[in-house]
Length: 292
Image (cartoon, rainbow, N blue to C red; front, side, top):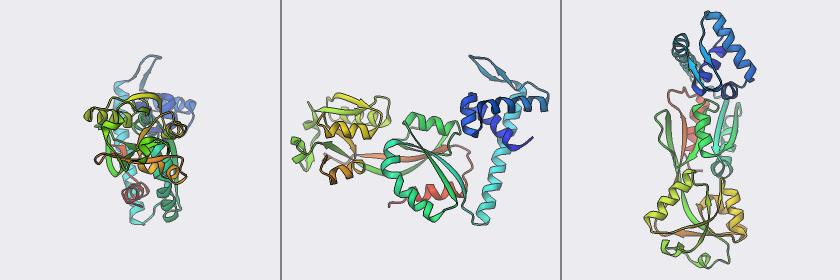
């Protein structure tokens, strides 16, 4: 019996899904089933009650999970400590990020990180916010990058920098001529918005409510790139992080106008509680906290 088998078992218990356990362990779904069968044969015990509707551990399965989790955490801690003692920064980091951070904030950090630590392989997945949380909780990735982090008792959250929010509009739009736009001027404007379940949309809805703005959401998207394209063709205006429209402002396809007051989008790294961070993961988090 190997540690890999115990990891597959723990991933299955935590995800309650053979498909997600296969993703987390980077094996096939068939391999997950075979691993569980092999463990059951080894311990001569039924570990998991399988059915289409329910996933449940047996008493023996719960015992194996509890002890396996401790063993895996201890093994990871030993491996991490050995690397630290030898000043080794290597291995693989699996990273899940929301589109806006992954496309605009992350690239210069990854470039600098890989230059300093060429022996580290960083694998990046671009996902919706809810999927980033799911990936982290299911051990499919090591770290997640999100905006407006949501508190979860199963997660550790490391605050990063804040993005200033601006009003993005076509250069010919009347509001584009202003140095600063007041919230009352946003009433009656057509808004290009994010999907209602996205953290950024929820934060903006709260901001509108606080300032008495009645927004007309003419279009809703799940990513910032599509939203910007809609603003460029004058379908409406949008409130977005300033860094995400720098290129368009430079190309004069969009204007970015400061909002009344100071309003920012908080960025954060999330990872599963009790997760043993490798030296490579610690170095990446440390770098992400810096301003480049």
